[in-house]
Image (cartoon, rainbow, N blue to C red; front, side):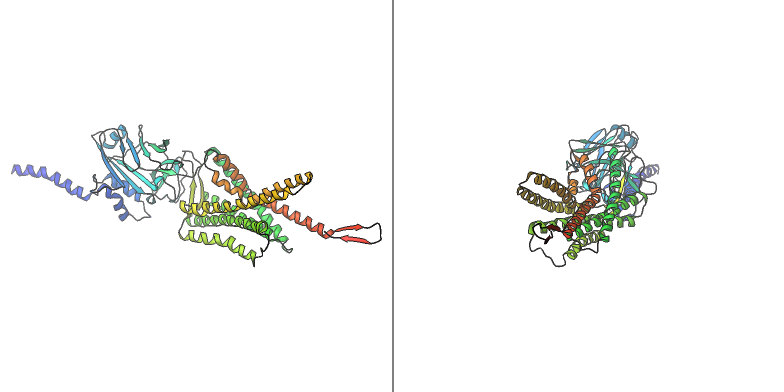
Length: 512
């Protein structure tokens, strides 16, 4: 009887632990189980975090590319063979198992769509926010766990090396900060970013969900504020002068206007709307938190930008008809067709983009702890931005630069036919003024957008900001010059020249 009692005492702990292990989920199954249990709009990272603390360690029968595990007995550098190398410090190992023996290292590659930033924009120290369209290195998040204890506040940081396949990318190491309300934000607290042989090395004093945030090349904090002020002041001036240009055009509407003038006014109208929508987008995204309104403003800003690019291309097409074809350029209902293209193409594009829900709050930040955050209601899907903005702008600039080259050749031929030195010098001056005006109308300063990377990125960014934010002012000056020149020509033609013949009493009247 005593032997039976001892057997029961011996077998019961083993049996109970077996039952408990059967109820616990395998670690590699935790992300899938959380996807099944937790709705997408809820906090999946919290579910994964809790599940990884109470899962059963073990490897799947067949290798899974999104999962890696290994027992750690001492300080070690582990190559996951999945594009990540992790260095576990001795202090991290001691914290993970309370100083007793080994600990199990678990690495899980998670879909970036699980990590949706809370709707409230968090601008605390070290916290960075963005929408789900944030660009992450590899489009994945690296979850790292060591043992069952929480590892944080390490004096010897854990190092995570992200293999960088794109040498031109700039990245910032961030981790997913879980908030008390169940939501989360990307944060840089406790993480430092270094680049070693093209690889991102994140040195962090805790373990969590990690990622490298890939951003457009943003200048240092000391330059962001001046660039913002240049944009705001330039946009305000462009709004004022484009509005004045439209008013002047409407006041002179009774007179017959040339097609060129009407096209200039259409371009200035698109610029007027662009700068207003830009200022509204920046102001609203920084002071309000309404996703629907921000999506609408992002759509409006995208539409205005595309309309500006389209009317810029139309300016180039009209110049081509005037200078290259010259003859047989009559097109029935010419202005109506141009208007359908100028406003119709952007409208169709943004409708398609709006259906796919690509608009929302887009945030620029430098990745430093005291970084300046610049939110904007804009496109938060990278591929859509590349195709509809970068690609479209590239085609427009290529076409307009060819047209501008043709104009320069035409001017050179005309100048070579001039024999008098004074007239030639005067003509050269007029040609340069005309060339600058046409460059502005054809949107040549927009081409600087492709030069804001590399060693000259900062000067190019300043020049780009100044020229494009003041484009409305430059077009007004061009329009004013053309208007004055037309009025002068009209005055001279109506005045005529009266020549008196001294040999007779007749007057000879000629009109130029």
